[in-house]
Image (cartoon, rainbow, N blue to C red):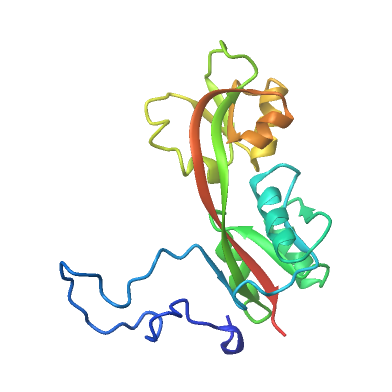
Length: 221
């Protein structure tokens, strides 16, 4: 992030971000620099407008739903530009096709997206998107041996699946995992309620809701 667009995340206390004075804990209160957990950050505190954004597709993935929610919250209309890969979504931003690029922070190679392009892009916004996660199958009584899932989904539920001896088939997205299950390529799929509903799958295990962090990149001006 360049100096012109860098802002302290700690805006309430008057201290510089990451450099607090020593304050002792006491029974009567917390140190003056302790604040509620950060849930969102914007270069303009939520006022930046976006006409369009790119993100990883296809439809009904977490990234699609998250990008759409973000776009609508910032005055945009229509749908995000859905790309085949996260790399393609960054290229769309670099080519000037969109105002921003929405990338899930859990993407394993996210550093490869922005580090080579730091001279042109910066992280303008960070937000949390909450999704319901589950294990889905075509039939409630089906024996589950093979499961399709993207690595970003299984990162949240490793403890829930520790005792299961599944054979994992990695999918590029929740949507594709659900489609693989629908086509009979695997017995089950881990993903979101939205992706499973699209393929008419049945939830056989509920993992609950998870807040997923996303970063929105913009071109430097």
